[in-house]
Image 1 (cartoon, rainbow over the protein chains, first blue to last red):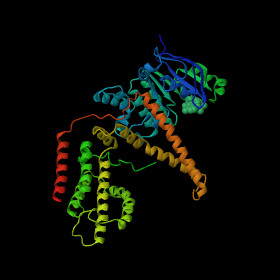
Image 2 (cartoon, rainbow over the protein chains, first blue to last red):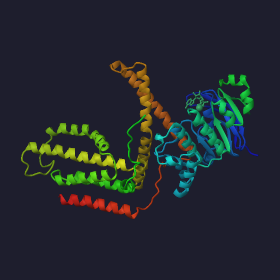
Image 3 (cartoon, rainbow over the protein chains, first blue to last red):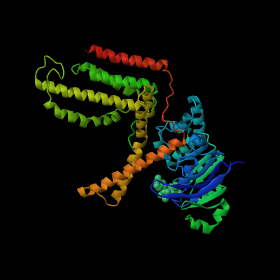
Image 4 (cartoon, each protein chain N blue to C red):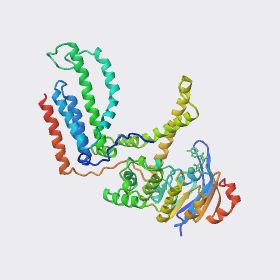
Length: 234
Length: 253
Ligand SMILES: Nc1ncnc2c1ncn2[C@@H]1O[C@H](COP(=O)(O)OP(=O)(O)O)[C@@H](O)[C@H]1O
Ligand SMILES: [Mg+2]
């Protein structure tokens, strides 16, 4: 079986000289739920921006068997649904509906198909009644769910989320965890929430200072106190 | 944090709200053009324009106080214009009023002219934004072939202006809770730093938003209009509205 995400010897340096990733290799198979954990500044966000070519470093990124390069960018971006950390960055349209409709419209679907998809996605995240509101008016939890809906509308094969539960109250967190469970499929998520990691991911990748320092079943990672301490997670 | 949104009340439901936004835009802009082109001494015409606006206001259930309060924004502009009026040449070139009693009278008329027209125009715009959701307004503008770049800019403006205001407000609170008063000139540096940070944050946000757009397959267009033809009711409303305006205008030539 070909892996859905395959990364080989990836390094990345920001234009200002910050070395954010060192020689990362990672393989994720279809249907896996993988958590990426690590202290602030470990390079987690930088890594996931490489999954769909928003950043391009040295090394190989192969998505679903397709090597990431200029001419495959469009195909790959459709496969990866990237949910950004800050919903205010993700929801840029004047109404929630337009945000959900953004990706399907870019895919060239006609308006009635777009409407079907948008309504379906809004229903899945429980925001159908809010579709005409501006996203500014939503609560943080609603914004998070709207961001997820906006990405689901692309029908991505792989869902990648940057800190999906951070900044939410316990109920908001529970709602997101349940929503992600109901969505299923291949999921990669960055998180700091070790308590919820077990219910969100079967496998955990630990990053520290731009490197992957451990990659194992979630239970094993969570029971390794020395490792968590070294990674700055406890 | 709560702001008066640009299109407050646009989510109400009324016969006016239900009219196609393209019709409303054409009608309201025609009203402004026709009003501005009406000679000021046809008081009756201006009275009728007002009547039309009040009728729309009543049907659309917009609180009149909201409209009046918002219309205050024109006061500074009108005052500035008023300041210059005593120095204006009030010959026939400014407006044709051959049997004018005296110069004073002309100047008053000139001021009155600016005041009434500015007031009607601003009320018209406030009404437009109160009965049409801003995104609908933008979509209609793009149906009228308004440049797409400008529409995108307006759309981002509408989406992010309050996010930025909130950010500024939070920073200001942080300053005040550390006993910052900002009274003297020395503090100008602090305010300057604050503005610089606000700018940098907005700039960085812009980059992240751009990435988020690319991640969802952006190809240059933000809002896409569903080009529906106007339904009969909307066309009828437009024709009746424009006919009324034209009648008033022709009657006061
Ligand atoms: N746009 C940027 N320009 C320069 N350096 C950056 C930029 N974004 C992140 N970094 C740096 O790269 C490193 C990794 O950041 P990031 O991937 O955001 O970490 P994480 O998501 O794990 O908290 C950090 O040292 C951070 O300061
Ligand atoms: Mg991050």
